[in-house]
Length: 450
Image (cartoon, rainbow, N blue to C red; front, side, top):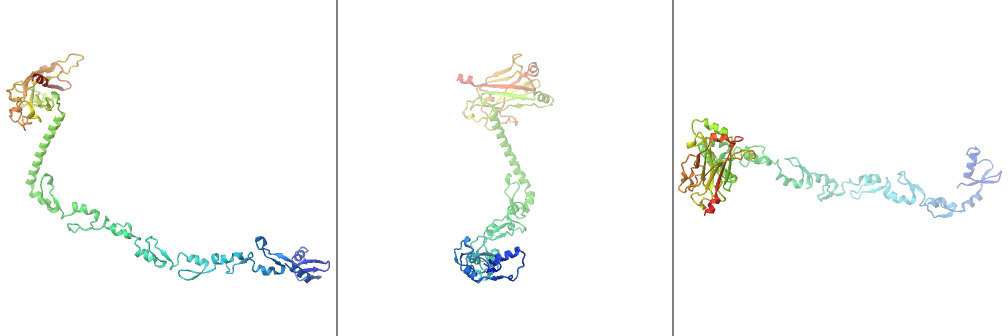
C-alpha cells in the first residue's frame, strides 16, 4: 500500500497508487509530486494501524494484524510464492519449499549412499542405477551379488549362467550345461576305435565310418548268410573272395537246395489249402486247344497235366487227378486220358489200406441247360484190393512220378481212352478253350456198407 498524499486545492486525499492512475488518465507525466501535493503523515499512520488479513487468506493463511506488519509477515508466510534458493528457476509456495529442496530440486545437493560422491539432484538421478559401488545381483540370475564395477567381468568369465557357444556345433548353451552337452554333441571330434587314423570323424559320423568307411574294420564275409563264417579286415575281403570261390559256390548250392525244398513244402501247403476236403474235385483245364495242338506237333513224348491235390473227406485220403490231352498208352494221339493216384497224406497212418472207395470221372458238357440237356461223359470204378496203385504210398514219394521214379504206389489208375477227340467235338465239352473234369470219391457208400 502506497503512502497517502493530499491535493490541497480540492482537499482530496489519494493513496499513491490511485493518484498515479488518475494522473495517467489526465496524461500527466509521472515524476516528482506536483505542486500543491503533499504527504499526509497523520493519515498514513492511521492507515498503517488498521487491522488486516494476509493477502493469501483465500489460499488458507489465517494471519491478521496491523497493516504495518504485513511485509514482515509475507517474508515468513507459508502461502507466499517464493523462488527456489538453489536458483533452479522454480517458484512455489514457501510451505512446499522443504519438500522441493529435498526431493525435486534439480540443483539440490545429494550424496550417493554407495560411493559417497556429491551430486546435484539431476546428476544424482542419472547416477542412480550406474553407480559402480552399488551392490547388485547378476543379471543372468545365477544368485551372485557384487558391486556393479565387477559385474562385467563376472558376466564374461565367472558367471555359471553365462551363455557360451559350443566350439564344435556353434550352438549357444549356459556355461553350466556346456560340458554335459559336449559329452553328447554330434559334432564332437572322435577317434576311430580301430585306430585307422582317419581325420575329421565326429560323434554323428562315427558309426557310419566304422561300418562303411574304416579300412581296418573287421567285417564278415558277404556270403555269411550262405554259411561262411570268415571274418577279416575290410581291405582283405577281396582276397578272401578269390581264395574261397569254390567254398562259396558249395554253400550257395546248399542254399539253393534248401530253398527248393522250402518251395516244394510251400507249394504243397498251398495245394492243401486250395484243395477240397469233401471228396469232389472240379478241375478246369484252360488253353486246352493250344495244349493239344502243341503236343500233337511233337515228334516224341506226351503232355501230362496234374490237378490240385484234394481229400476224399476230412482227415481222409489225399488224391490227385492227371490228364493227357493227346492221350496216353492205347489212347495216345486219339483220346483224352484221365487217371487218379493216391498221394502221401498227413493222416495215412489212421486210414484203411488199400484205398477202398469208388471213383468216378466226368467230362462235363458245357451246353446251355436252357437249350439242351447236358450229356456228361462219366466212368466209374471200384479199386481192387490187389491193385498196387491203391496201396499206401511210400512216405517221401510225393512227386516221384513227375521225377521219373517207378514207385508203383504212385502210379495212376484210370482210362487211357476216356473220350476220343472226335467225340469231344460233337458236344460243348470244349468251350471258351477250356474243359472241366470232375472226380468224385463215393465215401458215403463205403460207410453204409461197413
